[in-house]
Image (cartoon, rainbow, N blue to C red):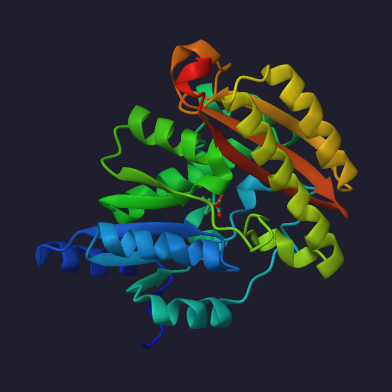
Length: 288
Ligand code: PAF
């Protein structure tokens, strides 16, 4: 299949999407920052199942990076992203520049409370305002019926859902389970910063979370399971930012007897690279 066509302006994006709509097509958007890997391709596959036309946006969004973060070095290679998208059947890439997304004098910021509190916001207080602002803009620009996000960024997914609901944006937000390397390491563009040996050790993050989720599900006290997970993550060579058990929908404190699903979320640094991961927690009925 040929690589998808590329548009770089909101006007050109709208012209294509309006044409599709006149033909009765249903449109899905997959927002990305490029450096596409198998995790992103799974989002495109889900988009293609959910709609008849798929737009992939590629934009490294400066407002979600703090000054000390990796905005300047974040991998950018449109050619290789287009080559990765060619076999997926994605129809269009929207690749705006910073001036198109944030025109001169841009002064509007979308801030979301609730699910953006704690977890990622402790180390990255700027992050979710940047994400919510750019995603709100993309949803409005594309007027998609559906937008697809990975569960790897679980808090981001919850924030985007809350934002779309609160702003009455008529786009259905779909979450796709995390795609993992055979070792269990969650696929991430930032894995490219790790050596093979560091990547192998980084798999310890998911292994520890999976063990803790299993233990909590079978009745172990969450505090004990989290203490054990902390030790295991650190033994793999990570410096831990957090490992926390939350309600999977609200991301507020998890109540084991609520009958609601939980989520175990962690962020940790290895070899100077900050990785995040999360796993579902289901309390078996015998232990609820
Ligand atoms: O998950 C990402 O790649 C980004 O945070 C997103 C959703 C594309 C917004 O810039």
